[in-house]
Length: 82
Image (cartoon, rainbow, N blue to C red; front, side, top):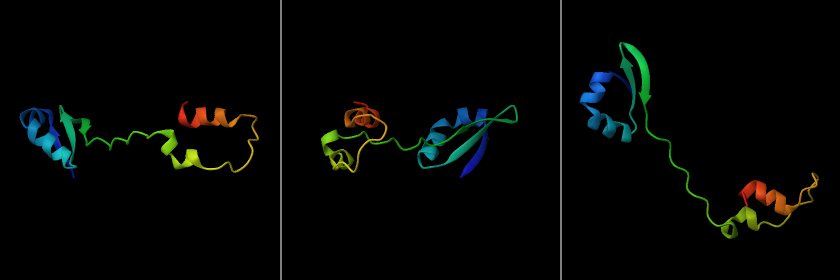
């Protein structure tokens, strides 16, 4: 649902707007009769990564040889930031 409200309505009914946004509603807010911004739900937060030892990709056996001259340790640093 995308509702249009003006800035005065937003200020007057902020708790209700917040509750609706938490349930998935979207609002376009007008300021001086022109669209100024949107109030939308946050995107889901990504789950933090687990330990490398628990990562099935990290535990996989090597499939081939590197053709770019980098070692497996270099690739791990690139992929996992370590």
